[in-house]
Length: 422
Image (cartoon, rainbow, N blue to C red):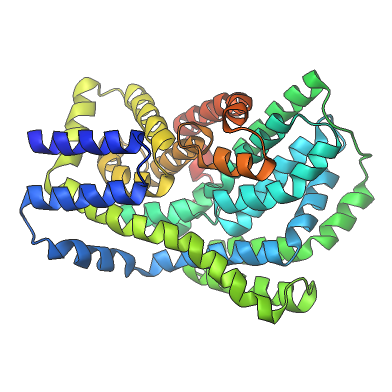
């Protein structure tokens, strides 16, 4: 146990020193394999291969490709115009538009980074023209991207389903209301700040304008319908829905909007493969690490420790939310899910918490880490896209962090929000 503690201490130090997450987790997986002495070192490579040889994981690259095709096909700008027709008439309308558009784009791509990058490229120049504070604009884009892993289709829910054996379809459906709640709360924050600081121009609300922009955005809305209706009705599995949506978006981008030439499709696929190439190796080594933690009975120790501290579900849930918030602030969501989900899910079962609802709690809380330093992936992407300083964007994002934390607590203690449609 002492050697295990030393390994974890060394890994934390490496994370704080800024060593790549893949290197840190891979090193931990190898060292723990040697410590457990249950399997030969060759087992590391075999487990990595087996962990990726899962049908549900195929949804990950398919949804990434779908998001990239949406961006390349010029549909992102249509989503922005539709969102602006809905909320652009209130003070801070462009800030609210950013958040609503992020929610819509999230319902197609399933990726937080893709949501931030795509929406940011479209909206940040317009926010600059309307004299929005650059730091606030970047923080709003970063915050909007949080729902990228909550509103289905969600790559994070795919990973959670793989890690715990839960139905990915149930997790997708459970994320709908919590994701919309987060969008609504962030819109309130954006409105209050914009009203106080007198940001942005207002447009005239028009039902005709909403209908017109909805018709213009019909291809993006069609992609959402294919994914959600197909999964909810049982026509598709999440993986099959990703494949159908990718083909649909390819057809729209090439044959309908004609923003994408056939000769440029390989470049889009290469871009998608780069994103997957960053995530997939992390998934593989995280699964090895998770297996070793199980062999060392670390999940049992975590369960005993938390329940020994308190058997009150309220107290334990608050402890779990706090733990996940800290974990999400120093490490990306994918490895956190694969490492912590097998540890924490047994606690939820013992406390009588619905496993699907608990999955939503885990993913929602980890999502807040995207706008929480020191990692804060969305903050880095928004900072790079806007040209604003990372520290300044981080300070501007504080109201969103507080609001989203309150959302996480509401989601945690009102199971109906997750289970209404499951």
